[in-house]
Image (cartoon, rainbow, N blue to C red; front, side, top):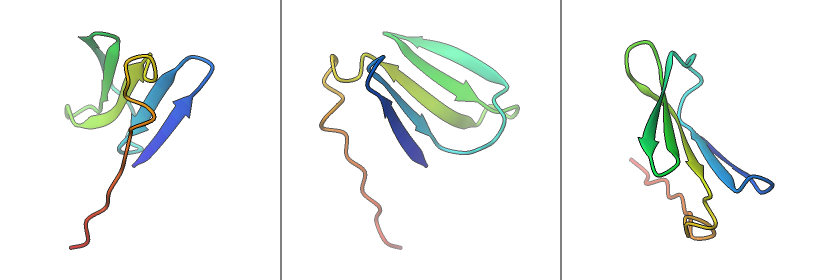
Amino acid sequence: MKATYFEDTDTLLIVFTDAPVADTRDLGHENLVDLDCDGGLVALTIEHARERNVLPDFEFEKVPV
């Protein structure tokens, strides 16, 4: 998983897998989801992330098994 923030467009892109994108769906409220050919989640795009207060509070925690 990789999260990238594009400051110039205030866009947060979270990529979950490197599978090819087969479909992109608009979830409304300027959120997009990319899906693979089996309908699995590839990536999530959040537009206006800082403006919508998603950033700077974005956190990631990995819990050991």
